[in-house]
Image 1 (cartoon, helix red, strand yellow):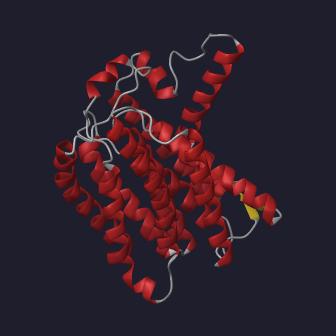
Image 2 (image 1 turned 30 degrees about the vertical axis):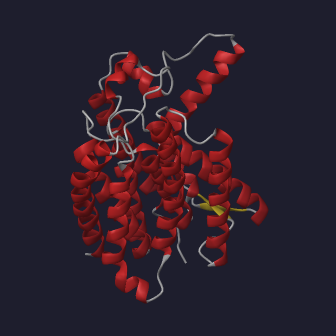
Length: 328
């Protein structure tokens, strides 16, 4: 019941905030600047309010307090740790968005600045989970049902790499209307199912709130989008996706449930690498993958539906891959 309450509260609060936030963002002229090197057909989106991720971040926060109050009284705070971890990334994204809006261009924080901030947050979260006894260096391998025992230093390096990579992969996926939210909702529901299956109710509350907040956000972000989540929202989502995976001790499931994130970031890496090695040749019409498909005639609605469906199917497969894990 608490999971349903968490979803509903996040949905309602996010939806109400959306009605208030969008006019405020327009009044503040917090419009998105479209990259000149991006698709020319996206230039019509210039000026669409950004930083809309604030609505579902706030909605999730309220839902965790309302639905998780009793759990917190008994000392169950894992859901708050994941929320705060994701929130740190959201703050990094907000600073980036603010710089873009302030200077009216599409570059905010520099790449090294983002990397150092994200790396610091990842290391701090891993250390905190270890200190609280919520994390072990035993790396569970989905589908095989075995654990690979690593040393803490090796695990820390692994965790930092996965977290930073996941956050940026989700960020890259946020390129067409509704896409990042659409593929993350099935991921959130996967985490709801796993948390319930493992008996981690508090983590389930966060995942349910995430699903509810994003569902409400789609009321405003589905094509044609009235608002974008900005880096505020996409970096928060990246933090939520990897934060939940590590809190549940199943980080290796990320490439399965996040198959779209992986495909998007790999297409970008392949394109850039091949372009440099071949002195100007390209494999994709345009990277990342969603732009390649757009140039091939795919509409934004088709991208949303196909990518979300693929994610949904992969999440079902992933649940089968982790459901036999013995949780002590």
